[in-house]
Length: 281
Length: 224
Image 1: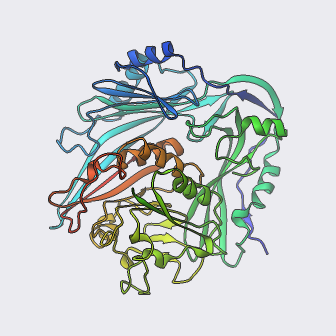
Image 2: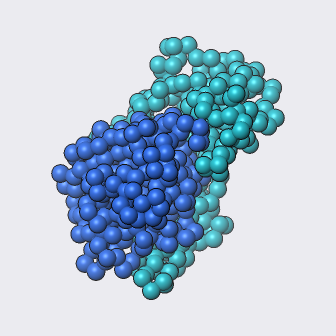
C-alpha cells in the first residue's frame, strides 16, 4: 500500500494567477558597457560560450546571455582570506553597504527585497589538531516578488558579498525581465497535492517503512537557472517536506507542482534546456 | 587529458524516496567535461564498494582501485548524509562511509558528492578529512541539503572547461542552480610543495601535485 503523506493546511482562495512571459534578453553592447561602467569594470566585452565577459584589471563582469542575469567579482578576493584581515561587518552595516552598492550599480529593483544574511566561512586544520576558523565574507541575499507572489528557484535572486575590508567582493543578480500576459485559472492546491502524492518519488515507499510529512506549501513562480532560456515564469505550488526511513532518517525535499493547466504550446514556450516540464518537478 | 567517471542513483527501492534528476545531472557532467569518459554506473549498477578501499572498514570489500580511484574526477549524484553517500542496491551495505574510504593513493584528484549534508561542517575533518585524503585534492559538495536538479553537472563542467579553478567552478555552479538557503562546501588538502587552492581541470591551467601526505586541510562553505 502506498505511503500516506501528511499535508498541512493548503493555500486557498486563489482562482486566477497572473502570468508573465520572459522574452529573450537584449544584451546590446551599450547596455553591457553601461552596467560595466557602473560597476567600475573597464574592458572590451568578449563572448565566451554562454557568457559575455568584461575583464578589467580589478574586476570581472559575467553577463548570462540567456537571461537578464549577471555576476560581478573582484579579482583580488581571496575566498580563504589567507592574508587574514578583520571580520566582515555586522548585519546593519552589511545591509547599508549592499544597498549602496546596488543603487550605484543600477541594480535596485522595487520587486526585490531583503531575504536573509549568509556568510562564507573557512576552517583550516593542521595535523597537530589546531583549527582556525574565519568568516571571510557576509552575503546579503534578496528575493523577488511579482503580483504578490514570490518568485522561487535559482533564476530569481540577488546577492551582495562583503569582506572584512568593507569591500563588495562579489555580487550577482539572476533575473528575467517579465512581461505581463493573460491571467490563467489556478489549479486548486488540493488537486496539486493529489498529483504530488502520485509522484515517482514515493512509489516504492509504504507506511511500514517510511514517513512522509509536508511541512510547507506556497504558491509562487518558478525561475529556472540563469544560463538557460525560459519563455514563461511557471506558477507552481512548492511543497517542502521530509521523508524518513530507517536507511536515511531525514531527507528534506522540495517538489513543485504546476499551478496552472498549460497547453502543449505553453509547455514548449516555458521549458528550458535540460529541464523536461513534468507536472511535478 | 583527464579521465572521468560518474555514478548516480534514481531508484532507491524503498530504502528512501526515489530521485528524479540524478541521471541527467551526472550525465550532463560526463557529456560536457573535456576528457576521457571511463565509467557511467547508475541505479542497480552503482555500488558503494566502487568508492571503498579493499580491507578498510566494515564490510571490507572495496574496489576503488578499479573505479573511483582509477580516474581523475568522479561525480556522484544521489542521497547523502554527514555519515556517507547512499546507494539503492545492497551489494555491500549501500552506504559509502568515510571509515571505508581512502582516496587519491592511486589516481583520484577531485570528487563531487552531489548529495545532501555530506560536507556538513561539524566534525568534517575527522569524518572526511585526515582519514580519507591520501593524495586527493578536493571533495566538493554541500554543507546543507541540496535540490534534486538536472543542470549542475553540466554547468560545473562548463565552468571547468572555461578555465575557472575547480573551487570557483563548483561555487559558481552551485550558485547557478540552488537558492540562497543552500550552502556549497568544499574540503581540500595541501602538503609541502602543493597548492590545490589554485587547481584547474587537466589542460585548463595549473594543477597541483598530489598532497599525498597532507599537513593542512581547508574547509570552505557559503551561501549559494
